Amino acid sequence: MKQEHHRSQWTSRLGFILATAGAAIGLGNLWKFPYLMGRNGGFSFLAAYLVFVVVLGIPVMMLEMSLGRYTAKDPVASYRQVSPKAGITGVFGVLAAFIILSYYSVIGGWLIKYLVSYATTFSAPADFNAFIGSWEAVFWFFIFLAVTAFICLRGVSGIEKTSKIMMPLLFVLLLVIILRSVTLPGAMEGLAFIFVPGKGGAFTMSSVSAALGQVFYSMSLCMGITITYGSYLSKGENIPKSCGNVAAMDTTVAVLAGVAIFPAVFAFGLEPGQGPSLIFGTLPKVFGSLTGGPVFAIAFFVLILFAAVTSAIALLEVVVSYVVGSWGWTRKKAVLTVGLLLFIVGLPSSLSFGPLADFKIFGYTFFDFAGVLTDNILLPVGGILMCWFLGWKWNLNHLADEIEDGCPRFKLRRVWIGCIKYLTPVLVLVVTISGFIGIYQAVSGG
Image (cartoon, rainbow, N blue to C red; front, side, top):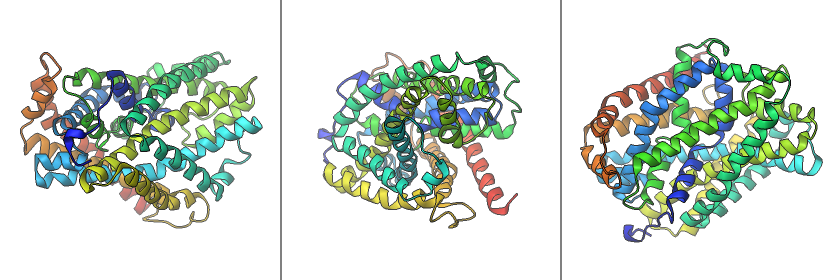
């Protein structure tokens, strides 16, 4: 598997687009984005997010995708081809993907538990906090990891086939939930919260930072995913168009998730700025008060589970691609070994709400610390290193030429290069500084 000549490739453009979109569309869209909007000004946050998708998300996605296709290697090997010293950038991405998946799978396990509960008892678990604080949560965490590993064992073909099924169904289910949500009494107030300026509360500089960070998280930037998926891409594929399609799908799902959730939140007089409890604690109460509520609850949790699985297999593929490409392991050995390590590393995160609730690292539970480590340190610092090595220590015209292979003429060539060299580092630095300030405030109690 070390021979790049035999590296797997996507069998169709549609499969590639859906797989890449599936990697980006995950809990960051359906869980995190709605409550970030609720906390950071509604429409104003959405507007800032859309701007950052254009000036940060798409340019960086194009950079990573073109690098992956240019080298046809895993993230670490791709950066090492640019410069031996640049390999650390790829290491940051692979490590971030590994750690994110370790705690992401914990939430994935919660989703499976809720889906099984609705399918068998027509209701949510009696007590969300009691469930996540029990050893039962570890079992469902393991099940989610096992499903992810099973799909990844089948390689690029398995990822592509899974995405072709799950992504269209995801959109269908989302539309079903929206149709029910917007017909509730008082639902229009929820839509106004999203689309009418000034309805979503105060929009501050912290809201700007939150929108920037969400672009990173939602579009899976600097996690090695786009480099890995780009390395399976055939020559001749139009990279700018593909990245635009993925960004459009990703953003559309994030907005539609808000349209699905906020009308119900306002219709029942709930708090729109809630965190994870909005999905697992509050919305099940809404479903319980609706006619046919269990049916819509099942559709809702299938929807979120599909999004979680497509992102999880992308995160796992990053690590597996590195192990197979750099260590020469077989895919089976890599998937099973990495999967076992993920379970071991993720176990403390799963137990952070129960037996290990009092165990703190700099004031954070293990679950929260893993998130802080990736979101506030590994991803933004990796982004800065990416801009430095690719934008300043290397010639970006190599990747611009790669982009033009499949694009008749890259009309925004100079704009894109300038963006990567000047604008992107500034925006990434804002995310990095904001992240460290957040850590300092949490540790100091400020």
